[in-house]
Image (cartoon, rainbow, N blue to C red; front, side, top):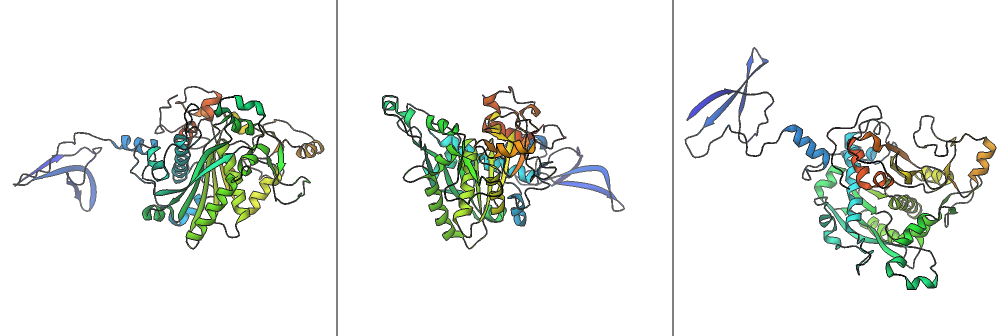
Length: 441
């Protein structure tokens, strides 16, 4: 047996199984003298001092983790703080600077939306156009999001309420596609993940606009009253939402609303006696549907779980009365907004909102108008006066040195949003160097 002692560099990365270090000390004090002891046994097993064939630096490992390359590394345990990260205190103190745990959770829910996009058949020449390409049992894995601990329980479809003229029958079938796969419901079933999250989580994930009729529904931008909603409030108008979004949620013999209600009812019967959360996430049109879904769940069920919306690049959905209604329900909404994304600035106009907190960053004055109060009241009663909802995490494509071009399409893409969340530190700090750097077009 041979014992050798050699100097050790302080910045070296050591494996606990292959290397054994000794740190010299004098009078109980740690010194800067490091030495490495290599124990060579008589047997064939040798604890080698040579570096492994594939060397990884800590910087590289951190880059992998932050950019999502290390799929096997799970985020830290949320435990009893899970309600805080779900918006119990409206994310106070977590957004600027952005809390690292919240960043990981936002990116994780963004992956569920990404899976919805990757699972959708966008090919209009395909016989399965506008349907889901994968079976429920393997959807997350085949869409590049394995090891989540979640199991899909329901596919969701949306139907346009637009009445088509007869001549449309002569057009290609994809032009008149009225019903399409829009997302899914998934439930956390993995015990370790439930323990990490501090509760069992139900996810509803929605993709963005894909079909011709969905685009037409998007531009039906006038406000309309909620079905079975409360009457007029102090503003005199009552809660109202965008006509097209409401049509996508409620139209059809078996509407998206019906499917959501049936599935949530079933899941509440199965898991209602344990800590439970409902997280609804979506991008673009999916973000708008997520807010309508949250409102509907809180309205329909007497004892709903904690409902949180994580929306990416969503348009405006309703008026000020609708926003007040969401707040009264206790629905928590975190809107991730790119300042350079045009979609987040439509539809309608946003007027001064006197019931906003003094330092709130909720509202970007898209109209850039300062109007007399009597004019504002008149405008608020029109079908074009919208209000922003929930809390806002405002980002900007211009802050990232890795976004190659600033255009409408790039600024609205989901992958741009995930990149900006990954790199955002605070409103006063530069973009993180460890953020994923490559954005392929």
